[in-house]
Length: 510
Image (cartoon, one colour):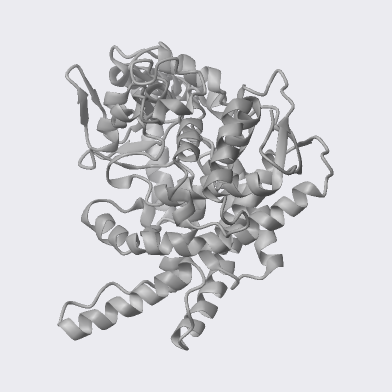
């Protein structure tokens, strides 16, 4: 068989050489030139009138820019037009920079499906529910809603607070030393997420290892990566880290199933999920309804991995920017402290609860404004599965990446006057920000909007609220403090230089 193929190949080459009169080297050069010309024609045909490079760098396209993205480069692209384009390797990419087109992408499941980034199917596993679409996705998602309903959210506060207090102890142990606190905020968020999701089923040493391993996943979240996960590449390292985290989750799930089957009470999100499945199954048996979907250990582990994926980097970013913005705006910080003092006046040491957070409207305004001004996620890539007529004069070709962006809509001066200023009052009774809900795409939109939106907001709120009980803090601005650095999500380029020290008695003074 091999000899037959080899003979056929030699015959074809000989025939081409004979018919063209070219030498073998000349024939190879001609074919390469032809492919490169076709590449340019294909790119320009897809580009049409869109702003973007007029010439594609052969083979790699704009790979070098994609490997080292900066906010300024992204911002320049957004300003070039409501739709613009670029090409990386063989991937044609269309970028939507206004609110209308971004929302249209997010709400067009008939044309697009989540792509996250090219490497994510390797990292999160191709059978992960996040890559589902249509009815299958909707049905799966309905089975998760119970995890973020009011009763469940309320049960997470004691878990989160235990982590907060441990982290606050660590922060205070530095005795007011100026440090780059971005990484401390990240660790608080990671440990809080792991304990809320998995309770104490995961040993402390394994939780720390998961936190360390997750750095490899964060590092691989570039918009464009080397397309093949070869050993030594970021994507390969991320896959290995995911395998470790997945195995750790599986062990926790097995332990949880045993305890819940023995009648144990809920201690975390995983417990809530297992109990809800048992209750749902029992109800269906009693009412004669069709048996509900029974989530396997693998489905649960991969789903919790996506919860971690969705929350870890974005919420770590949100914490970092919020503490920095509060320290830089002492008038706002004092209002936050005063509100917490007022609602706890009868019992200053009362535990944090959902009810307390519902009595903290100004704190909620602060968190919403922080996420608007410095959104953790700038864009969410999708892929077209057929030609997508996004506007009257342009159709995104099938199998292209199409990217809705959030930053321009969140900085629209019509929706948010003085959009680059930190103004929590714009979300208050006398503000107008709530009149433009379509612009506030911090948590996405459409069928794949963030399932844990309220959990994320409450986590950010409760972290700050509990910090006001024990801590005061100071930010040390540098020339890079307000410069956005991209490490999967957005962060201050200087990594947020701050110090924390014990709160003094009495009202906060500024």
